[in-house]
Length: 305
Image (cartoon, rainbow, N blue to C red; front, side, top):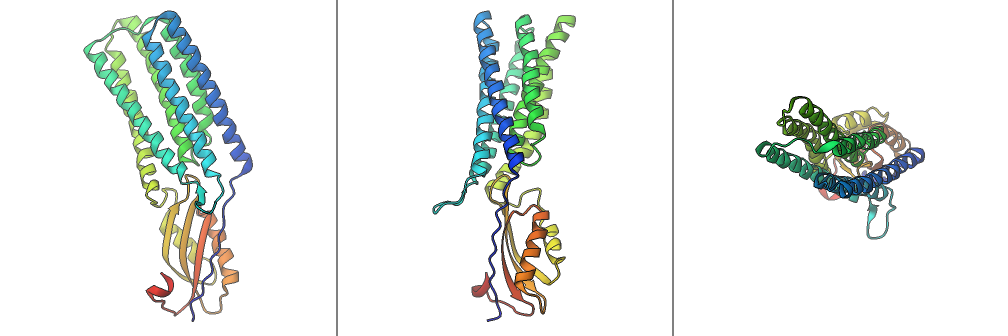
């Protein structure tokens, strides 16, 4: 039979230095934000401020989101076993979807609170809240800064970054509202600023949600273009054609591919396949299973599909 099967698996090991740095960022962020929750709750109890206690509860939710992102990071590094042949890496995609939903709920809460403030306008409560909001800008802003460097490569880190950036914006909004109200007495500025912030967060969250949903049903990741992948594979000497291409996410950081590679006359699979894999890594494909065929051979459905 002319049809030749060559299955070559390559698991892309994440950069250990990068992975270690990201793990450190998560731990620092969790400790920093959890400490701020305790401080804010303590001041809220001391001053008898329900607003501060409520915000402390909200920030505790952000700590939970950071913990989820850390769990997803751990899941992405799990090794395969007999029952889960890709490990638990797909769990990182489901966590990204959960984090996006939590962000949408947070946006809904901001909008509901804004509507309530329109109906019952009131000035921002006291200097303690203003100072705590300013501290929130520093804590949340610094956490967002730590995550910003890593968020381009992982959707879960991007979700954690959006959580912290959103909280920073909310704290900025509280401070701005407090200043404007104290100078002008214009209390309606508070819900207006909140709505603007909610819309900004919603735009970013919607993209995160849609990408997470697509990845959860094994759609091609946005960072990978199938047409570019095929073009890259065809550039390899000895490759005549490529078909039966399938691309899907193993986790939020790893992408898999299966394909049939048609070899030109005289080309040997042992030489062509490693070179194809090298080109695939340039496209962000970390795990590839390739099946080779001889040029001019038309395989039936039973033979190669």
